[in-house]
Length: 253
Image (tube, rainbow, N blue to C red):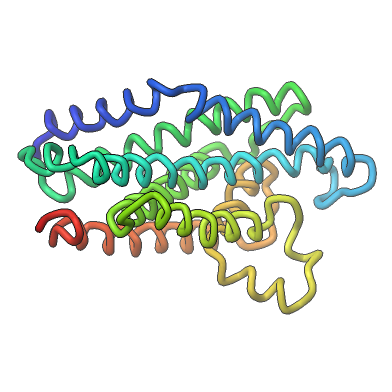
């Protein structure tokens, strides 16, 4: 494996999003914090989802995971689409890197950006309400798997999109609705039966519910089911993405 080349591409991708740190890390943290202040302030006195857990505390893991989902996707999708539009993707493809090495570098950078957003939001959330972690390794596993899965989806979106409008449609009509309808602001047990049943077919629900289980030790779904679904989803989209990189679909003439 070309570790030096993979590391170089990872560093290049990391420097890319760090060069616009306010846009890529600080802005999503502030946006999620505004959700927390508004919804937490309004609902905290009137709603308790889990016994002994205030609504503001319940909300924080959901907002962290929603930010992770959206920023991991944005990192890879914007990088590939921008490179295609500017015509410099050819220099990446000319490097002596295999499909897996390209994949590893892009996804690692997406996971790093998502982790930085999550850490920033967790730190600021702690100022609003202390949030101890019941199962830290489970929480970290869900964070890595979810950010990797969305990084892969972003890579697929960037490969398929011919222009930013296509990418925007994919994000606005697929990623954002599924992330908002996955239990960020509520427990699915409060939904009507039909919507509750449909939520079980949304992989983003298991990402958020499993991540929340890592904090409180309780969730709407069995924790190992959440881990299995998110892990299986990550493997499935990774197989599709690696196949596209291997074949050069929409990347090579």
